Image (cartoon, rainbow, N blue to C red; front, side):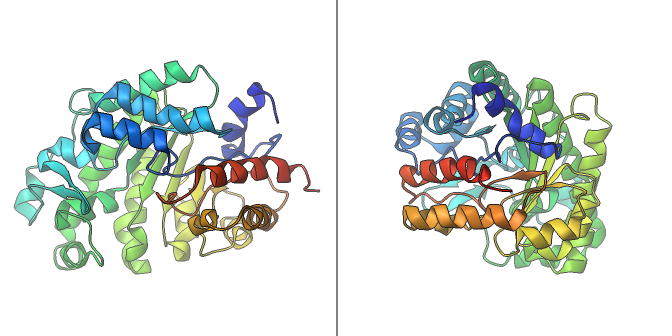
Length: 355
């Protein structure tokens, strides 16, 4: 196993497409329900929102997977819907149903009432958690801050909750494109401000989750998602706190638009499991690092299969710089933590066998 100095550097080096001693690995939703220690902390907190909005508890669960596994990065425990909640939409969680907003948007008049929240006031619990985690990590691994994409936030803000097809938000975009663009511009500026504040507080990498971008047809994806991801990238590049902090964009199900995503100027693209890393790398032409892309269901298979599939993903990317190993989406609650340990060990060890 590599020493601590290697572990603290390889993730950021990979994002810069520099040589690494081993492929870095972290896992989306690595602080989550598959860990018994997370479930215990969640029970102690009493609610998900209490957990996410209490910096000491958010720090505790952020560090839990770092204490248990040889991961190469920590990601702040928070939620993508903190930004619209700070805009006054009234976020709450219903057991077994997920997030809901008390005051969803129903038209242009509602959009006109929105403003960009100040991250150091209405979202102070997020930046306080970043500061606390950075202190407690003591340089062991880098910390990733994150936010939701403008389009994905708009999906929840208009639907009021999760949806199977997001028909209401798509209809709004088609019927009232000017209103949708006003909303997405507000969201982009709010997301950039939130990410800038996280960078100022100590986040060493930033990530935008475009969870529902893949629900859009390619033309709509370019107009209503990529355009605003590019706006965020531009805002951060010109921000004193974030301009040197690498940005990862992950748009699940949007493989048809990898080139457009790479054109935003981000440092890395997250890739889901429905495309090979070889194809993704050839299509982005070395303009970005790539993150991914093991199917999360693989972690429910045998240990032998997990090791085999890790090797397949590494072989698929090949001996090129700029790969961060991850799942193609978040880890599921039913995964055995031992399987995660085997995956992480296999990523680090299999790297040594590559030519």
